[in-house]
Length: 191
Image 1 (tube, rainbow, N blue to C red):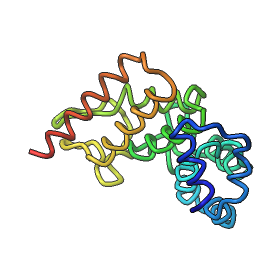
Image 2 (image 1 turned 90 degrees about the horizontal axis):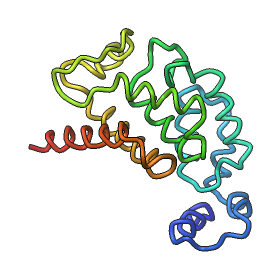
Image 3 (image 1 turned 90 degrees about the vertical axis):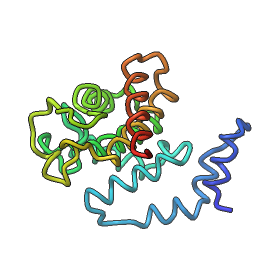
């Protein structure tokens, strides 16, 4: 069993962990992530999202490098944009990076709070709603929020909000309401 998985299982069972870096430094998964070089921006996003699933990954130099890249090139004053261009923020990538930041203990950082504010202001959770987001990136990449909002973006957004609620702030009423709206929308798709 990989040492990173062992670490995650121990964390989930609330077991005492004396040296989490020992687990990470002896993990084949972490070694494979470390061997990924020359990643393009999307590769860096997915590497960070994957690492964020591993407890204590924020302590790794690789994770710190990926966070520095995202902060410098993909974090905008409005949220995370996978192209780095504010006008091309889309729900799924904004949500994935927001969730990764929450898992890495950065849910209250400016970058994460900008992503959360974008969700609160612009994400729609129902058909025939129009987002007040003035830019066209959400229509350019598959029509994220046209008359029928993309269920992938909604699903990832709900997951990110649940992670935020669990790891950062359980009292945010707007987040609670958005989770409820998103779950209701996803359940309606089943019928």
